[in-house]
Length: 246
Image (cartoon, rainbow, N blue to C red; front, top):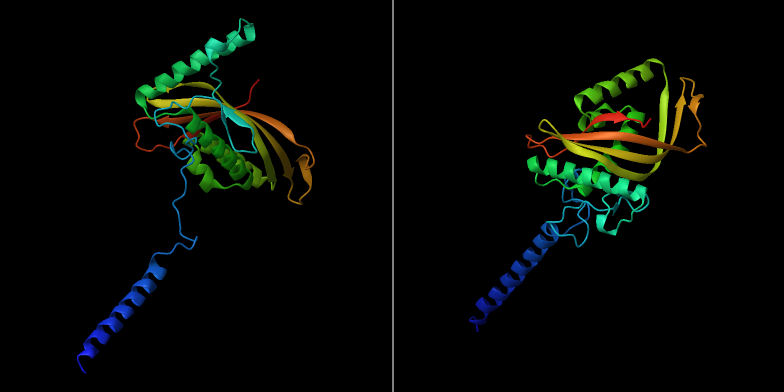
């Protein structure tokens, strides 16, 4: 009669083992939705890959930016579909110039994709505008070249000494368009024309509005030049210059 006890013991310990395995799986293997993820590189070449796009695609076509913020484009129209009009001819010439600039960049940076840069630059534009209004040196320092950072810092210092506060609400980027591209020395440079809608207000130390209008949306056009040292392992681009069209 005692011969049955070892068999019962085996079943008991097996059930205990299964219970422990299930408990460990619940504790270690379940995703809670609160796991930490590494921050996204705003200039990551694969982060903004279009669905269905092949890795070999150059990505130099008209593309959407964010769903509610207009579009970003490289302005590369198909010459075969263009008519004889002067305006379209000018676009074709600009397109050829941009293609030459992109090819020049790819001689030193074969992984360059215009669309990826446009997406990243649009995100950088939003971050820089917000950081400048808030006086956030840390964010600005990570996205600006040394020369541009010095200019921004001087403006922030002057604003602080005057006791003024800048309030900027970026309604959205209506359009971002690459207008120039090429190589300067070993640095790849791309100039983008951003057209955005903003509400800009400057307040004095007492909180009174001394510039701008809280109820007025202004269309702002900026020419921002981004650059990257192709000799560096750092894939990030930084803002090299800012200008406004004449």
